[in-house]
Image (cartoon, rainbow, N blue to C red; front, side, top):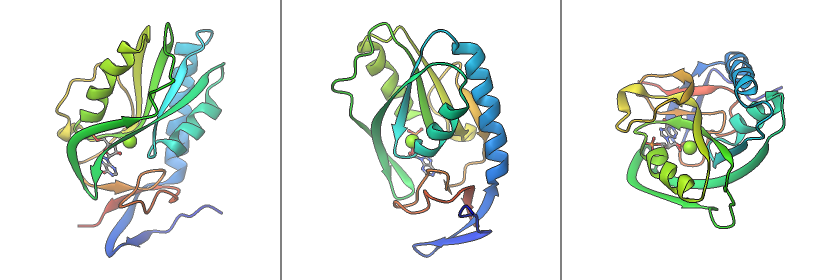
Length: 182
Ligand code: IMP
Ligand code: MG
């Protein structure tokens, strides 16, 4: 049994189930199928952005039907429910991207500031191509252009947790995605 309540209270805030584990699983398989068609035989590097993308990455790469390697970096800009606007990356040292086709795997794109800051860094490390795959996108919050991004679900501009995403480090282990109740 996975952890799948209808509602959950995290540090005094109530979150309601918004996307079920079954719907996520179906969409993740579809996305993995598209990625298999796109990358088969090209041995991409899946670059997962921790911590939020850890579950999405694990599911996506197990449905990806070709050879890939995997690396992780950590990005931080959020405190509580707000982006600080100041994006920091850890784990880039020792990452050899020369002539690699990189697929960045993100949990959620909100303002787009994190990925906007990351893209030139990855190209600077020699990547021959950089593409983005995100489970969630809040289109109304997007402030930066991120062309060609693969998106699992477009969602309204509410704070969400679960399936890897957190509120103050809680909620990552929820099997579905939960939205802050109004
Ligand atoms: P951006 O840089 O504004 O696009 O924000 C991206 C990062 O902020 C994501 O990778 C998440 O870590 C975090 N984030 C943005 N929105 C949410 C949310 O609704 N719930 C949890 N984390 C979020
Ligand atoms: Mg993230």
